Image 1 (cartoon, rainbow, N blue to C red):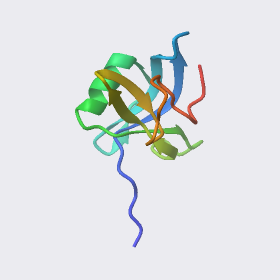
Image 2 (cartoon, rainbow, N blue to C red):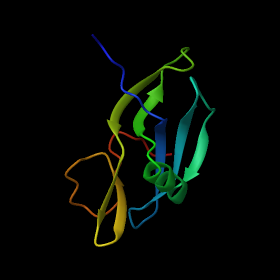
Image 3 (cartoon, rainbow, N blue to C red):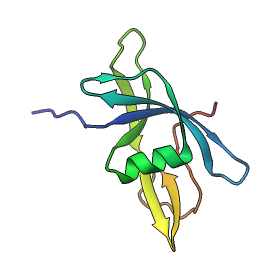
Image 4 (cartoon, rainbow, N blue to C red):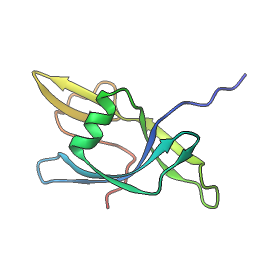
Length: 105
């Protein structure tokens, strides 16, 4: 039997500052069984959503299929000595945001 991965949002593209921290993310969020239009979330808003238990994936909308997405890696919140960073890698040793597979905008 095949089960779909459950996720609460799709990160379509990102913007970083010169220090390597995420500034904004362009996302689609799930509301019930449908998704929102594109939203721009700040780093703090995205971190708060992930801390509250929501799951975000890297991906993009499939053309002509409104609520269908091609998904990639899951976005994780890593921490070390009180410092938080976003990553798509489980073993991220870099202490900066790195969402591989998400294009820049």
